[in-house]
Length: 184
Ligand SMILES: Cc1cc2nc3c(=O)[nH]c(=O)nc-3n(C[C@H](O)[C@H](O)[C@H](O)COP(=O)(O)O)c2cc1C
Image (cartoon, rainbow, N blue to C red):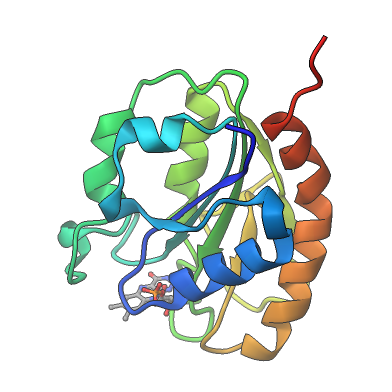
């Protein structure tokens, strides 16, 4: 696929909103964002460049019926792609959370997408600094950086658009190159 695939999970719609903002910033380079509960494994795996987003629900898990959200989500989707090779794919991750209400497990769900991507052999891009956030603990940190962009629409919504713009500038060259490799 010559476009960047964008897939998200959501309960109350915020992660969908962020996915749409990302698609708008990327323009023609990105496909229309798809809710993960409305796609097959093959639909996702057809892309060489991916942006995957999840909100944080539950404790140390991906959102889904297990975390009492209204519809199936990443938790139900992951078994379809667990163990599949992601070699040659470039993946950027974004996670939503609420640092004021959940400072002890801020944006934790994102780490599960990261571990799956790394285990499959993908090149994960778009790591993000923790400066500007206030929390006690986040499992989404590896080597002191978030494994992807973290958005907090509950307590820092005024920072969202600027964060999105900066992150897209950071990831767009790498994702576009993966989606449209030069032909020999
Ligand atoms: C029941 C519930 C549990 C949540 N648990 C966490 C959490 O553990 N960590 C966190 O950072 N945010 C947590 N949040 C905040 C959500 O991740 C955040 O509001 C997110 O933007 C929701 O995204 P959505 O509208 O796409 O579902 C929780 C929110 C609710 C309502």
